[in-house]
Length: 612
Image (cartoon, rainbow, N blue to C red; front, side, top):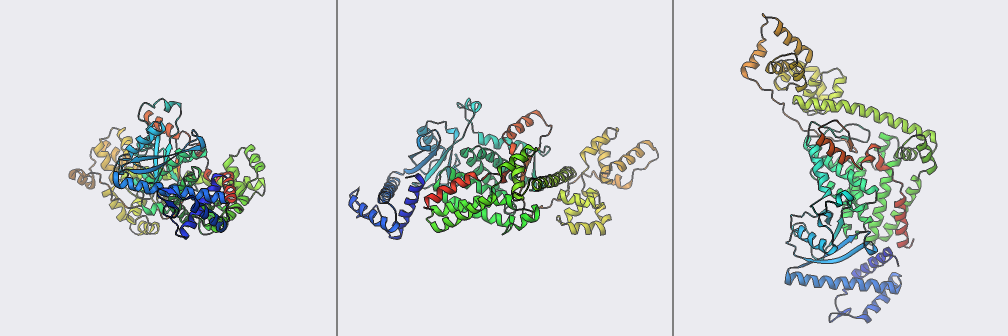
C-alpha cells in the first residue's frame, strides 16, 4: 500500500469515527491503558463494509489513530503536571531513510524558539544555524517564545535544512545564515537611493512607481521571492519554502492597497503551497487553504473572471492558464485531504483537461530554439498561438519583443525623471510627468501640477493650461536647485550660493541661468534683480515641496528587474553575489513556462488514491 493510499484510508476512517462520535481512547476500545483488540477488529469489519475498504487497511488506520489519540492525552497530562509540551518534529531530507525523519521533542512553551532549535539540532546532529523551524505558515523567530508564536502542545513543527555549497560548508564552525545574508545584502543596495540595481516593471515592461518605503519593502519581498524561485527550479524545496515565507513576511509591511494590486502575491502563495505538497507537509493544510483562497481572489482581480484582462493586454490567456491549472490541482489535493472526495475528483478532471490543452509540441519548441529564440519565448508563443504554426509563433515573439523594447525605453526615461524629481524636491508619478512633457510642458511645471493635483492627470493639465504663471511663481518658492546643474555651473568659476539662487529663479533652466551669471560677471553696471536680492538677503534655503501620497490602483504583475551599474566595488560585489542564480530574470514571463509534467504526475497519483 502506497503512502498516499494509506493517507486516503486514514482520512476516510477518521471522518467515519467523527460522524459516529466514536472515541478510540475510551472504553470499549481502550481498557486499563491497553487497546481492546476484539472491539478494534469488530470496528474494522464494520468500517470495511461502510467505506468499502479492505479490512487490513481499516484496522491499520484505526490502530494508528488510536495510538495518536492516546499519545496526545498523555502529552496533555505531562504539560499540565510538568509544564513540558510534546512537539512532533518532521524533518524531510534525502539523507534519511524514507525521505523524512519523525520524532518528538519535549520543551516548555515559554522557551524561545532558539532553545527548541538547539534540541532539534542535537537530535539530528546538524549545525543549528542551518535549520529553520516552520509552524503555522511562518518561520519561527529565535528570540520569541513558542507560546507567543502560537505553538501548541502536540503540534507538528516542520524542520528544514538550508542547503550549502563547499565554500559555505567551510564556515560551519561559525554562525552562518545564508537566508539572512541575502536579506542584509539586499538592504544595503535597496537603501542606497543613488543606485538603481533593482527596478520594478509590470508584465508589459513598464516602470512601476511607489513611495520609497513601499518600494523598498516590495522589492525586498520580490528579491527573496525570486531567490526562492531559483531554488524551486532546482527542486530545492527546503530553501525555496524558507525564502518564500521570508518574502511573505516582507510583503506584510506593504499597504493593503499595494498588496491587492499585484499578482505576485498570488504567485507567492501558490508556490508556498506547492512546496508544502512537495515536502509532504500535510499539517500545513490550514495555512494552505488560506493561501489558495488568497491566490484565487487575486487571480480573479488581476486576470478577470474569464481572463478578459489578460486577453486585452496580451491578446492571449494561454500562459496564465498554466497558473490556474496548478491552482485547480492544489485545490483538488486540498479537498482530498479534507475528505471532500467528489469535489477533489471534479477538480482533478478539470486540471487534467486543461493540462492536455496547454501541452506544447516539443518538436516545435526545439525548432524555435534552433532559430535562436529562448525556451521560454518558444513555450509562451506556442501556447499563446495554440500550437498552430511556427510562423504564427515567430510573429508573436517579434511583436512581444517590440512591445517590451518600447516599454523599457519609456521606462528608462521615467527612471531619469524620477531621479531628477528626487534631486529638486518634487513628488510626482514619473510616468505621468513624461506624458505631460510629451504634451510640451516643462518637467518642473508638470511635476508641480501633478503634485498639487495628487497625480490626477486631467486636473494637472487643467492647472497647466489655466494657472501656469501661478505655478511658475510657486516653483521659485519650493524648487530645489538641481545638484548636477550646480556642479556644471561651478566649473565656470561662479560662487555656489549665487548659482543655487539663480537656478531657483530660473527654475533649473541651465541656459538662462548661465546667461544671467555671465551677464553679472561681465557687466560692471549690471544690477542684481530685486527678486534675487530678496532671496540672498533673506538667506532663503532651498526648501522641499510638500510630498504627496502616490497610489497605484491598476492591477499589475510587478516584476523585479536587475540592472548592472558601475558603482563602488563593495556594492558591486554584493550585487554580483545577489545576482547569482537569478538568470531566469533575463527571460520575461519565465514563470509561465513550466512544462506541467510534475503537475500531471501529481494529478495521476491522486487519481489513483481516489480510485479513479
